Length: 168
Image 1 (spheres, rainbow, N blue to C red):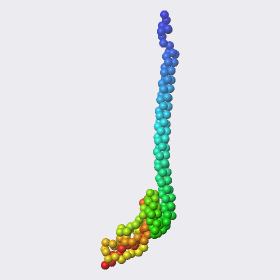
Image 2: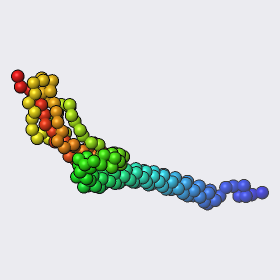
Image 3: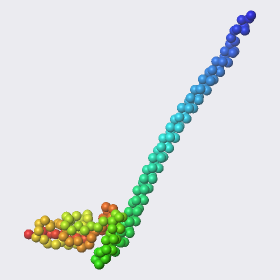
Image 4: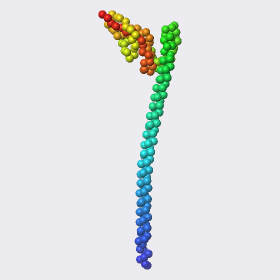
């Protein structure tokens, strides 16, 4: 027997080592590609989540804008109806006036009839004074010449009032 048969030929050794090195390089390249893909996937996921959050915020802002628009529309309608309310409250149409006020109340309109309240220029417009000998009536609203109206917390017409002025 020859020793050559049992001997490992250096060429065969080199090919297997080269093959193992090539496989190791391919595995390293694949791991690098996987890491890069994972980073990109995370970036895409983060971007998608930000876009979703932006969309939700946009939808909320849109809903708020719609609500504000509806308040504006309501304001214009109510402003047009205030002279009708005034006419109904003066005339003998108390049931119609009450029905109309109930309907408008459902849409955020409240009436301001501030007799006895402390005068506040933010909510009331003074059209005169009434002299009084009672100190507790000083700067109090003693007479309402024209009711005021408030729509969803916003004054659309201040009440026109006469306030007490205490004189010794």
